Amino acid sequence: MGNTSTIPTTPSSHHDKDEFAPEIHLTGNNFRIENNGQVFLIPTEENNNGTKMTQGIVVFYAPWCHYCKEFAPVCNQYAQQLTGSSFNFKAVDCTDTAHNGPLTKALNIRSYPTLKYIDPATQEVRPLNIRRTKKDIGNFLREQNLIV
Image 1 (tube, helix red, strand yellow):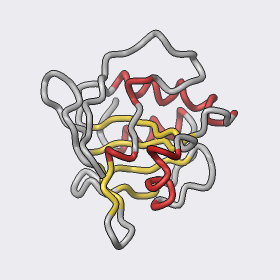
Image 2 (cartoon, helix red, strand yellow):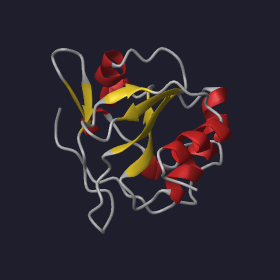
Image 3 (cartoon, one colour):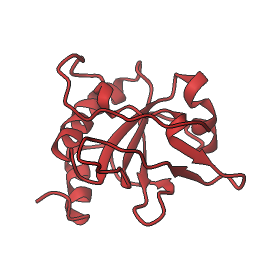
């Protein structure tokens, strides 16, 4: 799919509160789509200490979506809280079809926001069937021993 680029993880104050922070964005270039339809994250250097994202939650969203705008601050908060770990929150803009069309098609993204989980053992992108609330995301992160 092409080379991946480093995604900065320094928190930014230059985004609206109802938008996903620029530093958590990924594009289709960050993923590998297999012929059998499986999708895998391509781990990239995430920050200056060399930590790579090998697991996490990816939110597939549309900028015009009301529910996505409500969910963005939750993702931004957890993304900032988990900076420096191998677990990250990332976001993919599904309206950017030039960069993300093949990825959203391969993952059958049909509603927004859609949550996917990066499996830590394989980096495979899998469904994440939890509610899109701060409480449920927090419970999931506690189950993964990522937050207290």
